[in-house]
Length: 178
Image 1 (spheres, helix red, strand yellow):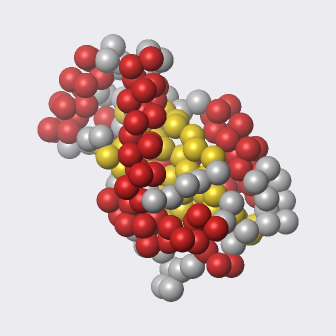
Image 2 (cartoon, helix red, strand yellow):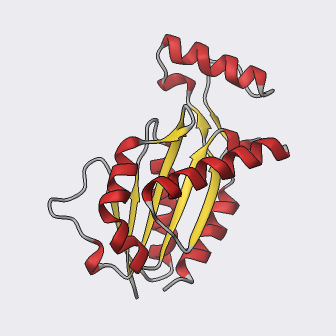
């Protein structure tokens, strides 16, 4: 049994849900998992007591959460010494055209370049449109973006695009790191 830290940043909750699912999957495989929100890590947090680390963040306006970027920069030496994985959540990952896939890859790579982190595994996963959690302006903007991409525009409900089979496969891959 390995001790694994699953650290995440989430704006509307989908990245937290994905992190929890990864944590549950690792727990089911016999690992001791600690879920940590990157905005509020425990006082004096260190990866030194962990055998592996998973970090997840979502993309908004082309960038991952700043507090996750700061967290990774602060702990980059430990992350680069520890078996680790990164998952990046975005609506763009729900699109199947090659241009969208390239954009997703570029955003993920930009995060890694900005932080200096070299995880053993990376995973880009689609998130969710949570219209019910947006204010009026954000709802309007997100509807326009969704419309331009041929996506869902009924703002009276939320849409989840996360492929849970892919999340399970990533979890299995992470379990294989330790």
